[in-house]
Image 1: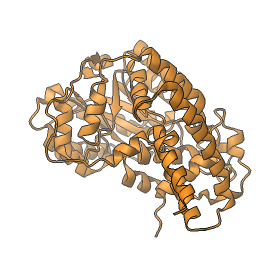
Image 2: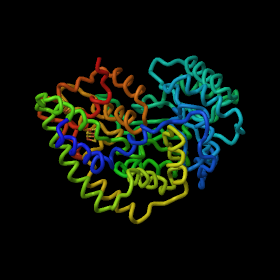
Image 3: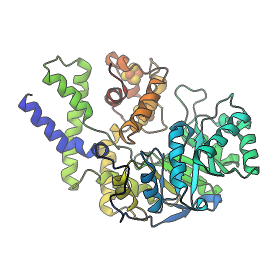
Image 4: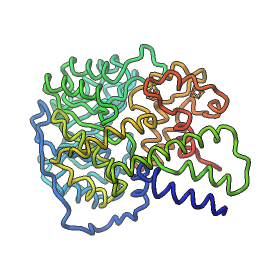
Length: 440
Ligand code: SF4
Ligand code: SF4
């Protein structure tokens, strides 16, 4: 290996991109699935009323509950977390794991919510069958909430098959509440609706009790307005995508440098990206020095404290992957942002805002002549990097009707010219492609 290249790579890993690669560092930890190595885990300190359900929910919740072993979920529950977020889309194995974990706990002390993607042709029988399936796999008599998963239009909220089925199951005592999770419209959907449009309609509909929405320190305005409206109508609120930069890593730089190491000619499109990486490296280095960052998790901690500081947000859902994550996140319960963290997040927003594609956005997509679902691809990459759900992310990516990012190589970047946040779309799409593509 070229020593110059090697030194540069070491520098990148230890400094600039390291702060963004916090989650990836943790991904490499060995997960002990069998026993809890630290019985003195921290505990939840704050509980909030989950809107009109009246349930006192832990300010930190477990979700999506895609955990490698039931013992990890038990440790999460032992720490005081009492909200479990699941979905049919996360797989039956996962539901069975939840069932094994909760059998030793007082069922009434837990709030278990699942999600089901309702389509136009979904029948009442489909919904009833799905809920009975969940109950069977989780070995529980009832589900606290069933949410419509990833609602992408206000029309879907009126799906009468869903409402008739959930009404029947409520009267049978098998279901208590219904809710909605939303990332806004899918690409090129007509009419296009934002997350706020759809969730606002869900709130006014009157039948939904619980929402799952995007809210974080970079993308805060829309989420804040939705949370305020939920307070007025007394709906329960849960949050997702609370750390916008989770997992952004040096992996793409590695790919670039591997090409250099092999003596390959660097294609033009990678040169363009290389320039972006160097720009990021420069910004991040001064950022680390200015904030005297001592560890890679400082931004992540501050990001979680930011959302916890909003009392209209009842439970912030964390993707726990192992015991280390329990240690890392539970102690944030009941804490508030420090002045130093406020400054850190403000600078992070300024310096790194162009490296975060806002969840539930999609404003640039109509300008792409190739109809590339930019926002959705970025979200799948978030699952891959921030949530450590590689298999799920890759499967979702391969399910997209258009995912050919080759078109971007020779495109002048119409999308970038139409992103109000100045996101480096071609760079981020390249990172996503690197992560989500299976090379055979
Ligand atoms: S790149 Fe910009 S405009 Fe496009 S979806 Fe992301 S944040 Fe929105
Ligand atoms: S660079 Fe061009 S082809 Fe690629 S997403 Fe943007 S507009 Fe579409």
